[in-house]
Length: 73
Image 1: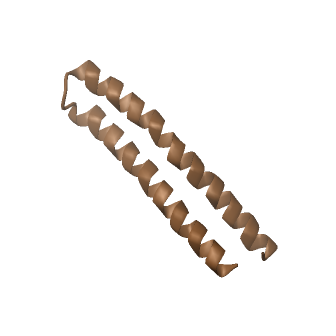
Image 2: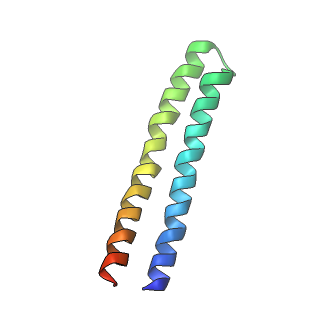
Image 3: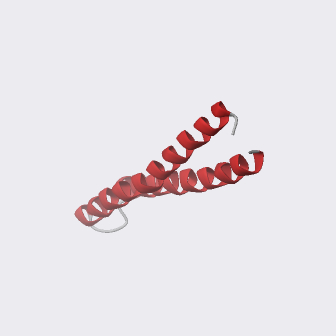
């Protein structure tokens, strides 16, 4: 069980870091606006929405880890 939880933990951390990194990039695009204002805001919204995909996967992995730990599998 421990090796499965360790593998899930590493996967969870990767997805969480990816999602949070994308959120950081989206906020940086909104604040710094490296391109034209409207282009930067549109890109920021797209990146912000894409950030939810790895965050949702991380949430599901965390739920699976919690169930495994509580059941003692």
